[in-house]
Amino acid sequence: MNFEIVNGKAAKIETGCLIVAVEANASLSPTATALDKTSKGYISDLIETGDITGKAGELVLLHKLPGVAARRVLLVGVGTSEERKDRHYRKLIKAVDATLSKSGISQVVFALDGLASASDDVYRQTRLLVEWVSTDFYQYDTTKSKKADAIKLEQISILLSDKDTELGESALLDGVAIANGVNTARELGNLPGNICTPSYLAERAIALAEEFDSIEVEILDEEAMGELGMNSLLSVGKGSAEPSRLIVIKYSGDDSGSDPHVLVGKGITFDTGGISLKPGAGMDEMKFDMCGAASVIGTAEAIAEMQLPINVVVIVAAAENMPSDRASKPGDVVTTMSGQTVEILNTDAEGRLVLCDALTYAKRFNPASVVDVATLTGACIIALGHHATGLMSNNEELADSLLQAGDYASDRAWPLPLWDDYQELLDSNFADIANIGGRSAGTITAGCFLSRFTKEYRWAHLDIAGVAWNSNGKEKGATGRCVPLLSQYLVNLVEAAE
Image (cartoon, rainbow, N blue to C red; front, side, top):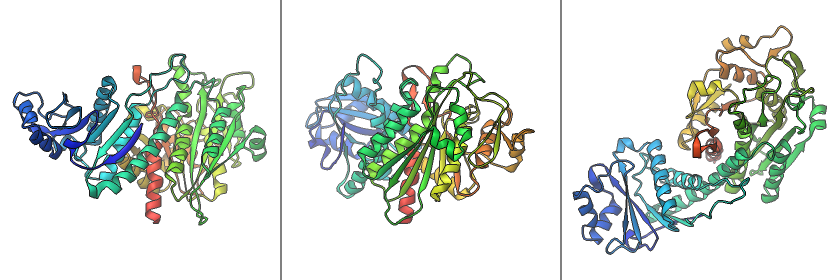
């Protein structure tokens, strides 16, 4: 699909479909008013007959509107100003995309006059529109013998005023880049575990370096990790025939030598739970346990495409957690790269075991900040459901920056406490720390575990267990979160520096 910004009078734009807003109580938007005048009251007649009222989510498709160059006009109800939150805006775009998909339309122009969202930020409205349309038309068919039909919608235009064109074009370019990163993350997450192995993730990282001159990649194999003392990470993959990998992606966008911001992703390409075996029902979804890795790889692609003037290091701790005669056992003690020892009370709490060594490794880059992303705890789903990412941090300013980025990108997070009171739940009689803290406050104690390896820099942890994938019916699959949040966070850092 191609995106572009267009200007001019809506009635004269030749396209397969012109999308126009109608507000609550049948109040016509400026574009709808112009079309009504051109068509000699056609839309007003529809309102009088009750065919459209402007109720949020209402859709009416018109053909060959008199005096209008577009072959079709899609009237969309945007409701009252109070109803134009991101949630409603997203649902509206999803409904429009479903209509476009069924119709076979190849060209479309969005002329919503900024009324679909409560925000009057042209950049944000435009970028979210681009991201969401791209997301809605993503199709997974990599492992299907019959490939998906080609998307008929080829050209998506957004009508803006002359004064907003430059801002809109910037939003469009950024939106396409972020959407590409999201879809890369979704594709990686959706691949089955027999294809998307730690080695496969390494190959995808190398492919990124081949695509972008600003990226270079280093892959650490098990021998190299062993020499560094990454026994905690290596302990997770011991039971698998698939070798573990530490993947380091270096994006160089700022040649001033500024310290990099580091993103760390949990890359458990399949999680059986190990010796602490998970129940069989729904275990297929444990291919999604590498969605943290997928999101940071997707973010690397997005910022490289945007050519952000910032330095970023992405670290992926990749392993497969399987039961075997070589697998770690409950009660085993391992020595981490930091020198701290960990008693493995539950082999299904493996994400923190790979992340702790990756977080210790991150220190060598003298990071300006470190953010790790992981499908870490089912407890996060109990706490926050499937709407918000859980956030913990040792730095209030960093936490606030991530929260604000998530709000702006419509990829929200919510803070949880990281108080010392919780640390004692990780006490062990046989090691410096246990890898679980009991049933209570599971998300928080997981964050407390990671915090023990991040004391020398500004760090935040994003638990995406509740938002990384959908489980239901045709919607089942990876979501690509937190690519928008992370991309916005890095964009904000660039803007603050400038």
